[in-house]
Image (cartoon, rainbow, N blue to C red; front, side):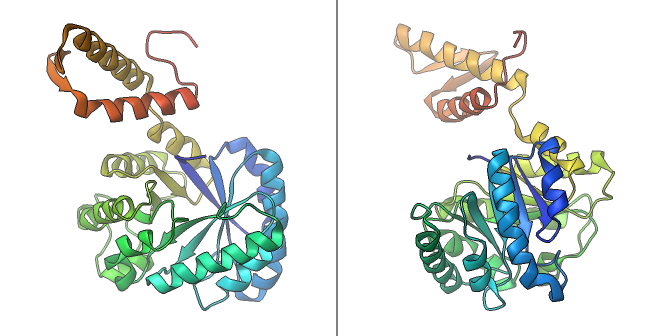
Length: 302
């Protein structure tokens, strides 16, 4: 399943939207029990989310659930939605290590009750408080379930993260670069290798702006994007996937290194630059992902 290039939000009480989502080909879906559900409908939405997980499981789409904040219904959310196909939870307003550990224990109980494999459900912390953002590395390290911290790369809309930090977001995003980069490093340093960027703050139909944000997120080191509109899925999948040109480049780099080894060289000249063993892990990772997604090198037919 990992890395995920796209996670599409769907309000948990909108089952009709779940039935239509397969046509957009998201890598995963996040059924939202938090901000997208009116308070009077939250209890009903738990049952709908559970049904939605089943529909997504049949479609082969990993199902995540954004539960409510810890202490605000999250425990009951987890117990209500645990069923076959339940792939992970996104914890909003993740603030401290204790919350992650309590969530881990709750998931262990829910897995046992639902007959799911132990620790099969991932945790994606979404820090939206000043303390949580400052301590994101510790959040990521608090449970082996943590697969990636959720950061925000956005346009001129002040959400929870902007308010917590105090910056005023712009589409250019200079004011966000430190925090966005910090969360990538914190995630990986804490043992959660797949940080995801929530892309917000653009006009829904402005796909050029979405592409700009996705490209920025990829450059900062995020593995994929969390999205709020189905039309954004194709953009994220394209941006975060290796391009045919990248596949061709890195396949050539590996071949150049193999030839160098046969000559007894550990560093070789490749396309005008010196490359050595330090470049191999990234090249190999790109080619593995290209093979998984059936992306062929430039100049070759599929």
